[in-house]
Image 1 (cartoon, one colour):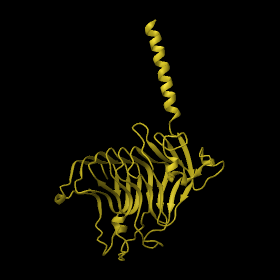
Image 2 (image 1 turned 180 degrees about the vertical axis):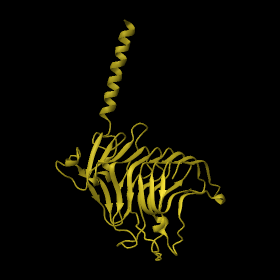
Image 3 (image 1 turned 45 degrees about the vertical axis):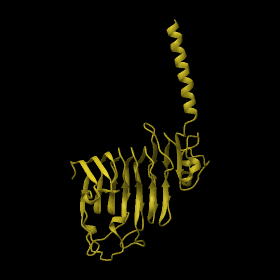
Image 4 (image 1 turned 90 degrees about the horizontal axis):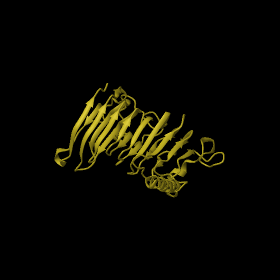
Length: 298
């Protein structure tokens, strides 16, 4: 009987502790669109907050109406940025088992004539960026025959430990045409994705029409995976390079990707040389890249 009461007391105490924890948790779901719509309550796509909600530091934290560990931020419809503008910048990290998720609802897009960046994790960790069924991040007017010819990176996820980027279309950072001999763009500066960190997973994305499409500027990173992505219309598809003079990366897995079609980046004086996969360290700086696994790529 004593043991039974002790057990019931422990359960009740656990219940109180759990209730307290839940009461102080961040909001579970919040919906964002170009502008506030409907009731402007953030409770659904028809009642979404304006996308500017995401970039306001006051809306980040552990409060019941704030973005924090465990929150899923849903993007609704088309969100359009200005030429050279910035998009959605994370203001905090998730935690193990409770990432902050940016989820594209069906048909959601982040568009601009050209982005400086559309999504940036700002050195935060435990973040998931999920394109859902057909999410798109793209430039709409940057390229050889288009209005703008500017550097652009669609997603910047530097020092993003335990981050996942999946199911996303990263399109048209720069649409280049074969034979363009006008040295108006540095192909290394028109990127779909720049990332670094340990425990990173980049998977099941469509990535196309970019110079150096994906750049992994590694630090002391380990246990990252780049898999099941489809990359095309590039000068470089994936470049893995040191991001600091003392960088030492290990256990990087690159597998089951499709990497094809780079002829649109044929050019005469831009220094274009097409690499599907390009890995290097800098001996002079004592950087190292070890335990690199590359397999089942087509």
